[in-house]
Amino acid sequence: LGKSASAGILASACSPLAEKDAWGPLGKLRLNRSSCGQGPFYQTPFEAAYRDVAEQRNFRKLEALFVEADADGSGEMSLDEFRAALRKDHMQKSFSLLGVQPHQAEVVFKRMNKNN
Image (tube, rainbow, N blue to C red; front, side):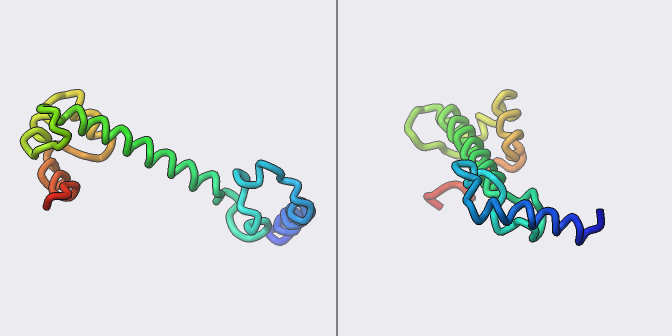
């Protein structure tokens, strides 16, 4: 099929569904209705939601790592506690998976420190 023929088939398939709201509860998870026949078929609200969930999951992991790194249990982590945590193999691996390398400890800490 040529590009215009496939676009026509896609438009004819999307149009009746959009008119009748045939997507039902999946409408929020399926393709953005405005993309019917216009642009990539893979850019969906679902993908945006998936990215949000991944970010939240990474944030929770990072938060758990910081709680573990808070050696004195004060609820605040010092740069020394952060450096000490990054000397532990399992912490290095965990932080590394989140994009934080041991040699970046001071830079990362300063960017995240609300007191500076």
